[in-house]
Length: 162
Image (cartoon, rainbow, N blue to C red; front, side):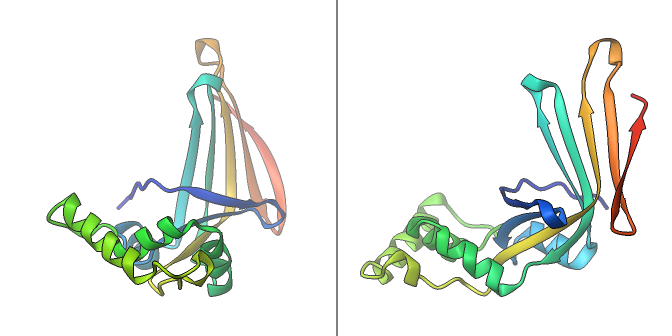
């Protein structure tokens, strides 16, 4: 089965071709990555530039240190929102979620943002690229396509026909 999820890409580590994002480990997105397959793809499309980049690779749960490091950069309100949201789970109303948030806001009202603890069910994932394809659209479907494939720790580039 193929899954499609929206995510906010937070970091690209060029040295090791890692793409890093964060989520609730109980979300549908995280469960599909942890339980179904360690392979995933990302695709970025820029309509105005007629350009896309597709990345395929292996996904792993990030270590706690990386998750903690990013957590510390988040605004307090975003931290509290992440704590109260049981991501992907049903909720009766938006009002109920807002009530949960306000209660959490009261709990941490005298707490500096850096002292709001990261919940264990929230953290990062890394997608380590094995393949990166660049696509640039042109008239009459005469698109430029190049694919970079990692083999034996070296990147090999192949030009593809449109």
